Image 1 (tube, rainbow, N blue to C red):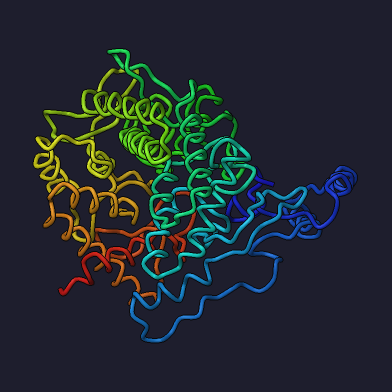
Image 2: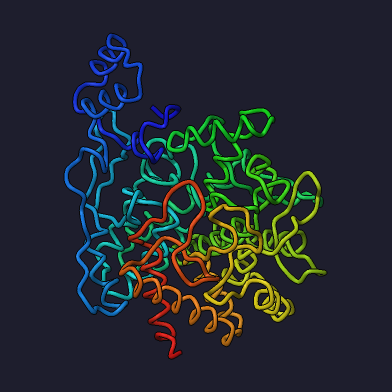
Length: 478
């Protein structure tokens, strides 16, 4: 099904649900041996409920004519909220005990790091019930699988995404000690997963930092054909290419010149060779959060242990992931024992989690302003590759990380400038199409492009960040 490109989107068939017992379907498949693409598609449609194809009429999101951007976002939440899920034998959807919010479009399930940025808007719009239930769903995933998968599909179970659970928990206003204890245990379990041996690198002085990873070294189920073609073109050992593609998907930046050895082509992807500044900044934040949770629970030994871990990580990040000549944070190339070239929006993560020394803040802010500030918001990178996490696209989560990081470190004017420019872009596209979309072209101030699939609307994290920025600064006046 995937190699013949039967459906336009490689994710379509892996989300399909069998209409009858899988063994019976496979028996008929072996007997019929549908040889043409038309016959294969007909067999699939006869035996599976295929999302967006034979699962009923397409759903449309009603738009209130003349609604403000803020009102439109509020009206979208019910359309992005899904009920509890019970897995079906032969289907890929994972069970979830409580309602949750999806990004939208082709993303029909709950996604990990997307959800934090979506929650920013849920909180501002008073959607606390679904925010809390979504956090509970993530905790249930850690309890069942030992980590939070990339998304709630079985084909995502071999990897995670940037670890934002501790920040989600930080948005909660619960005072229930049992709930807080359960969530702290989940964050600690996730920490153990994210710092496992397979994900750990020894830096030149022996300190330990982490990289992105995936437990499998095969083509991604949902992008099978694309991965096979990339591995073939690379001329490299296929298993390594598949592993690096999967690790790149775990980063959330799938895909970007950040992960390419030559800085240009996906065939040179080597994600597992890179110590990323965003991941390690988040792990520092997680260590500080666990220490605080342990202090509140009167677990002194735990609090001391995680405080020391955070201090060691901050020192390693500030030693190896900072370029004094270029005044930026970056990603460490393990093979070359050097920072990768090129400034990216990931440079703002040390500001976001509070580990950047005050002496570096002005220089870092100047770098962000000079190289990443675009007419419509914050650039992701300064390189055009055709990949979606490169120039000219800007992404809502990275706008938020930069704005919050700059604000926390006294760079109020630049933070507001980024917010104003991004909100102007979002508003321009909303006036043009009536939609909030997954990513934006922050040079032309319109919907973005590039990557493995069409531009998606919905869209959870754009809604959440837009709503939170409006609350923080208001809509720009010009």
